[in-house]
Image (cartoon, rainbow, N blue to C red; front, side):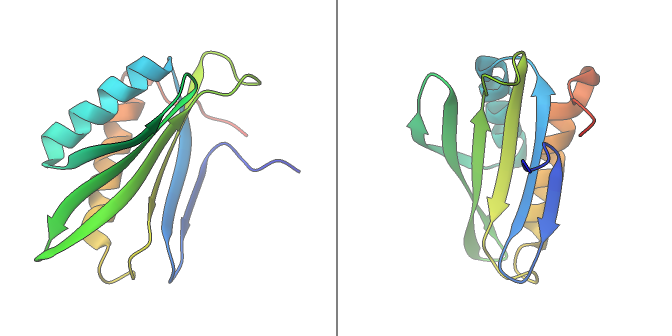
Length: 119
């Protein structure tokens, strides 16, 4: 059974969220960069291909630098949509501010009816 397109998970080991938006990869990249600028986050591109981009989103919270792993991907079986995931591997008490920044990113990505719901 395939994984659901929309998911949020918070454990002792990681915080993970995945959703999909209407648009193309370049649209998603622009929105992720806008979020980074708004949140004071440094986006360090790790890898970019024709179908995905992977960033380390780095910000200092309470004197400690944390990394949010951000991936935006297109899938051939889901044309016209981009799948975006955020992941942080810090302990729950250390990542609360990062989780808030992830929520802000999703609000930007989902604005104007871009969020695809279902499944």
